[in-house]
Amino acid sequence: MKPEELRRTEYVYNKGKLLLVFLVMVATTAGVIWLGFHPPRDKDPHVIWFFVSLWLALFCILASLALPKLLSKRPGLIISTAGIRAPNFPDQILPWSAIRSFDRVQAKYSDVIVLHLEPIAARTLTRQWLVGRLPEWLTGSRAKVSIPLQVLRGNPNTIFDQFVELLSEAYEAERQAMQEDGSIAPNDEDEALEPIAVYAGELTFGLEPPVAGTPTNWTLFVLGGTFRQSIVEHGQWWRLFTAPFMHGGILHLAFNCVSLWFAGGLFERLIGWRWFAAIFFASALGGSVASVWINAPNTIGVGASGGIVGLFAAVIAASFRFRSGPIADTLRIGAAQILIPSLLPFLSAARGGENIDYAGHFGGALIGAALSSLLLAFWPRERPTPRFGAAATAFSTLFVIIAAASLWPISNTRQFIVNDPMANYFAGKYEQAATGFAVRTAENPPTAPYYHLWRFMAQSRGNDTKAIADLKIAASKTDQGTWPYPVFSLFLGDLKPDELMAKAADSNQRCEATFYNGEWYLLGGNTQEARQRFEAALSSCPTTYMEYDGAKGELNSLGVQ
Image 1 (tube, rainbow, N blue to C red):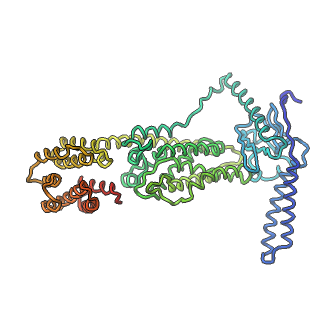
Image 2: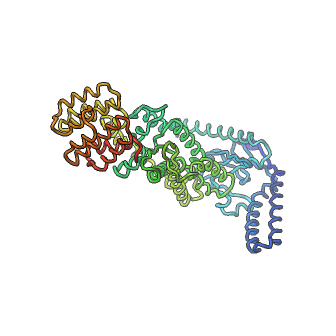
Image 3: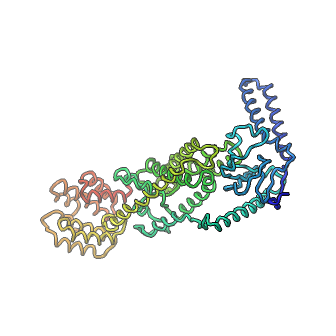
């Protein structure tokens, strides 16, 4: 025994299980051949033999993989302090330093340790028997070595625990040696706190108090959620980059964090952190675009779900790198468990009280699968990770820079709204709105009468007992012979809506009279009459008028599209 192999354990093949599997394959093959010679009368014999030929080819490949293990007199696996001798490479030892990472992939009928090797070490490996003559796309990359525990004699958990123990000892010894000679510095683990920090910002800087710890729609819109009109008409395209960092509630945040962690376990070790991040951000962008494009125009979209669903779609696409086997099956099953429920109503829109944006999921999945498939086309079999990592890093960096730069317009918008009495009025902050309108009366003397009217409406909505008294004071300072003094008379009870319309001298005054009549009916609780007046004002008032914006806001509050 060599000195470096003082700790050594051998595990032989479970030949009883292997023989049973092989006999089942032989029996199945015999049945398939019999079917070829005795095809059903209603079936074309040529078609039957075509499938028979396919099965025979598959049987030959499976037999070439199983027979070496069944006939071998060597141990199936050797674990020692020097390294590991894997089943497919019985004459070669893999030093622990050649193993970059590993996974244990468990399914119903399989239990496999997957070793991710350094490229240089992988190129030195040669397979035995007929397997060595099969193409690598069929047998799998040498950079990923599979150790099937279920075909070995012994408890799979015991074998795995010993493997982990020896590998950990080797890694720790190497790390300490490198630290002693100054090759590396001690590592600090990074924590993904960004989503939590952003969510805390939503609660802290929201324009309205959270409802049961959940930001309101108005807060989500102002702080960067997607909204079709803002993006298409006002050019606020940066919302496509900020919305994925936001979340609509603590459960939304928790589910996305867990899903992202699960996706990382499946995918990050396969393609590396650079492309993992790039596919996530690209899928998130695709989800934002699809959400804006497919959903109802008044939908406010937030959340990283598009990026996360895109990762799971990318996992399924990337699994075809392994063709078939436990690794591919585990990747597909694990991803499908989250992907399928996320896409079932894939063309549905997030409307009303729904919280699931299936349109965003669909867009993210489409981008994730497409990008992963494109990545596979340029991924050499001998490389452990995809090419163009620098391009992936550049894209992710650009995404984050745009999102960070968007804090400037978000801050400006928020500050404007905080100081805008009209915005506060339609946000239900009537006390702040009344104060803001009072300030505007001093800043804009020519339009002061209109701001007095809006202050009165805000005070009335906020149940301010001084509303009528303040309106009377404002009316006393307004020329009774000019417009809009008749509107003051309407709210003070001296005129009726029809009388106000009769005092309007031109089309502009009539549109204003129509709007304020609607407010009079609304304050009286007659929403049907108020709605009709607001619709008429919206169609007749110039778009630059306060009454146009007021009619539009009131109709939105009444649920009119």
